Image (cartoon, rainbow, N blue to C red; front, top):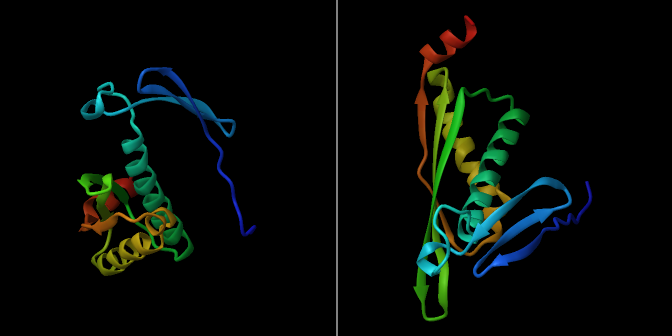
Length: 154
């Protein structure tokens, strides 16, 4: 694997505090705006949402990849993320991002291993390692054997 990778995107202003972001590598552009609290549009993706989304996407990809490599089977993973934006003497910045993964496993014996893999995914996620904001992991691992049984009978 190469030691350097590049990811290119471009943005175009479409109106005040709003625009569209695109990449030649991705077919679908995304409209964005400043958040409403900074005089932007409501209900539109913001740079702040992209920032938090990049961390949660990295976390999910990292966990899934680690699980695959280590032959760890899980039923489902859903992750909520909350970015905390605070103002200090230098201006606004993300001070913390809370990751709340909810992992379902089929057997009790997988509970602790799943919890360890969630923690390892947070430590090794390249976005988490690249930012200054504190990343807090608040994991929940649930054993749900009845889901596993119903999925195998389909």
